[in-house]
Length: 268
Image 1 (cartoon, rainbow, N blue to C red):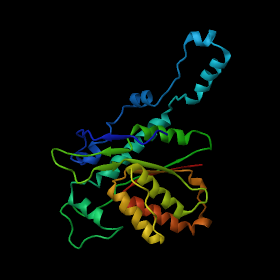
Image 2: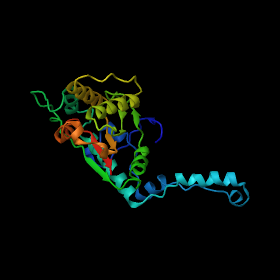
Image 3: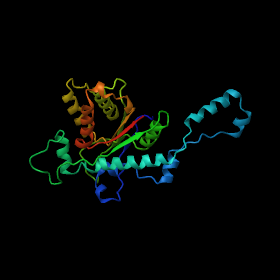
Image 4: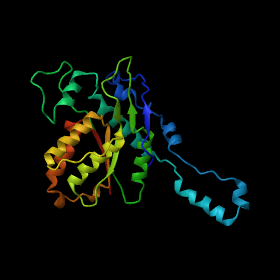
């Protein structure tokens, strides 16, 4: 996967009215057509005919190794791109930083809310969940990485329509691998570490108590406006080692429903 890609926000007016006036959505890359997806995410290594027929054997062997980078997108990649683009937009649709409901969302934990309803209404998640399952070695991870690499990981904001939007950095996506020891706590710490790395700050010391750690992660996710969290190698999770199925489900449910972050699960 490429290094963290940072770009300055360039806002583009959206077609759908529910997406207009939202700097988080307007700063995302424009939607690609199906042909553009295939063109951008394909790679066919070129070879000079002179190399093919006259180069020394050791040089030709190096060219053969380039076949590992060969990419010929199939229709499932187009479907994955469309699903992830929609999940990103829906994740941000409910978190417009210019609306009072989002201010409430940023200052309260979980399902907590103020006694007086904000003018734009209480925060209500529109985040989506995507599950990608396939045989080991079938190309799931490569496909997901191709799609995610289309989007910058960090978008930096300074002025939206002449006004500071109230935040400076937007983390579009973060991808982690499920830990080998199947620990939910290790999963939490991995998320926190990836967020710190994406923002470009020193790694935060995780809270000792699980409840405090959950609040720590929630605060970081909210303040960075994370769009999508991708968790790969989900087959590593063993409920018998994590303290039960309900504990894991509750944690992931909190990320989607209370924090409004879309999620992509990938596993065998």
